[in-house]
Length: 245
Image 1 (cartoon, rainbow, N blue to C red):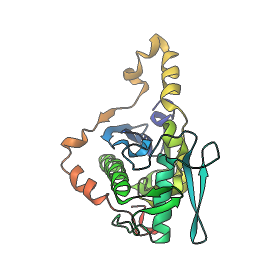
Image 2: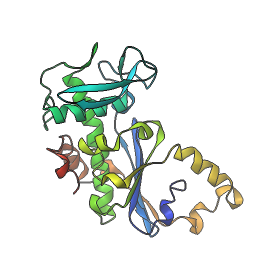
Image 3: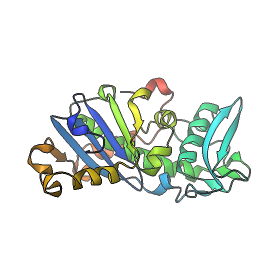
């Protein structure tokens, strides 16, 4: 919050640090709503059939090239697997090429991304669980803030995965239902915020004494609508036209 200056925003904004646990916040200088949601390890390349961290050999970028795919491999050379950003890109490309249906069904299964790396049906399901948890959490916070996705003027992505994630791919799979120009990288926001807090008077002890607006924690597991939203968010949008709502 400190690093992205959400506590000073005049218009409703948001931020997320995406990983096995996704921390999300929505609001402005008048009030902020925060939550944490268990997204699972897909964003970090875990529980993916050929998943890996973003190390040499990982496919971290996938784009459509005509009727096929173009990939980027960390460090160059032959690919060994997919990291989180490559997984999101691959599914986005699968949606564009018709290999992945909005329901998440993959045809053919497996679907070759770049030999010897392929995407499998189980990988799609793992991504759907992670994507559904984050998207549902965002919808709950937006509702609490009295906003819709269209009302978010700026959305910050923090952390290693957030900074490597393609905003266009995140929008296409329905992970972040915001305008493309609203999504921006925040770098290592947790570290920057910690440094800023250390230099506040009394070593940050006054954070809750007027510096921050009211901050409301939302327990998603206790929210009566979260499970329904989670189920609704498991699918992928038919097109980008259906993303913002």
